Image 1 (cartoon, rainbow, N blue to C red):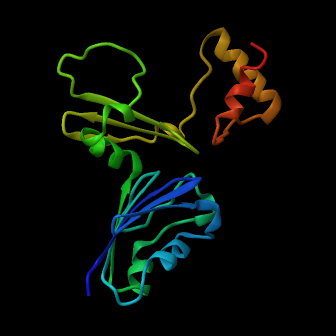
Image 2: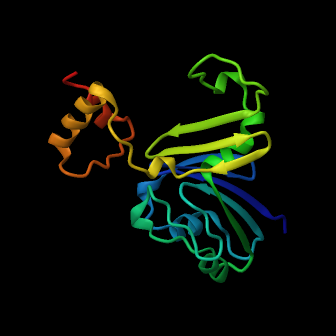
Length: 192
């Protein structure tokens, strides 16, 4: 029996799946938990190797809690391997995975934020706005994960203060908002 290879990029809105060279996009909201995704993709008794890229810190022993999919709670690899003994599963931070893949990206897939030159051209900051905000840093061959998308940032200057005040009026004391189209940020700039 030929083994099955599955790669997944799990986001707060979509789950992009590559299963034996076949691409599929699923809606994250359609699944009550991660085990529902596994039940859909894994066939009993067929050896299966899975790599999942998802947001948040990765803990292979204690499990993973994707910060952008609260209803899933903790994803436990041991629980998956207990139900499906033929499955081997590994997790990687999504932006770490993307940073490792940058050398294979085509120029058309990249967006230059600011022209300039670097002394050695080997330092890269990867920013991925989606349901959350993913960030990773690559220095030569070393990739460093970040939880920059899950930290508070202060308002900066008069313009930043106006955005903050507009959002504070709308959302209350603590502003923690994530939208697929960054609509909240547009609202914050409305009265500039």
